[in-house]
Image (cartoon, rainbow, N blue to C red; front, top):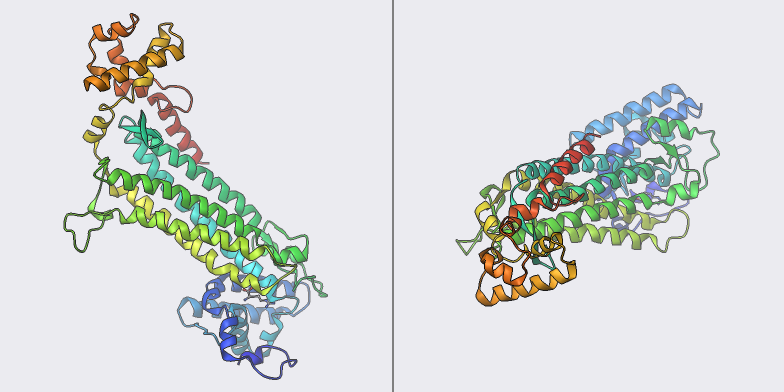
Length: 460
Ligand code: ARG
């Protein structure tokens, strides 16, 4: 069977193991709907330019539509007797419509064909992933709105630094997702270019109309250079880069949720609907979902690396190496979408912030020390001097096992006469957060503005 694919140049058929090795049908069957879409546009163009007749084109289109229906009903399942989806469709078409099916491939190569398929596929998937990103952003935003005044320790070096609004923390992930959303929009522009009509590498002798097929398929423009058109996979690399970044962002968030759910932090409880148990330790509740997201990040980043390495040594134009562009790409599309969905569910119904514990956490340490220094600065003490004074205070407190809020006014005034009664208010966690009202800061007024801005950007 494999041997019959090729022209009469070939005398005998492929070694079966080699045929299997060479075949992509087991994974590129996923491109079938896009392959049909591309072939329909191609057939219509062939008729419009007079290369085939209108009746022939109609027959081809009907046959192609039938194959799509068969595929959707699970009735079309070619195996490795077909090398790839393109041959599988062409062979089935000829079975259905007879010899006219053999005209479909006029003025076309599998090289521009597969390039078209993969762009149509990715264009659609990019739009799905952007929708998933929007859902995820919406979940973040709702959680942020409900937690404007929930305070949580903010960290640098994973050491408690300054308390912040939980909403501010969540909105940082919203911002990353917003960049991801924009980035994918940019990738879509360079994905949405038609290579159809580039032929095998050099164009075709037939009077085709590339702009017609491009328009029919919703492409924004056509590749200007046929060699580039059939061998460019930059858009796939760009997509994998964007997907890797999405995953890296989800992975950072996952890591935080895992930490927060640990007994050491104890900031969040995972609800039963989103947590798992242990097969041996009855007391356990495990954060499998964020752990899996963190783990799957490796796969997507690996696919990016794989695609870069796939391309680095390829001479122009098409090389069979390019058949290897698919599995990593398909996997990244599925993994990224699934992780965004899982994280959205986790945010929507899976997390219960332990407010009591959080409010203790922002009171039990020296994360208000900067505010004492800032207080002195407002009383005219130069910052560096204030900073050193407060360092001394912290040391004294540590020696006496006291917190800043426990110092008496006398003790404050021994440190510096500028301290007055209002120091106690200045160092309450709520005031500490509220006072950071600089643009983009955690102050409640700023966070409210950020929430409004986020809503505006999401409606664009
Ligand atoms: N299955 C091939 C791929 O995925 C289709 C293109 C094959 N072209 C060729 N000249 N062998 O890339």
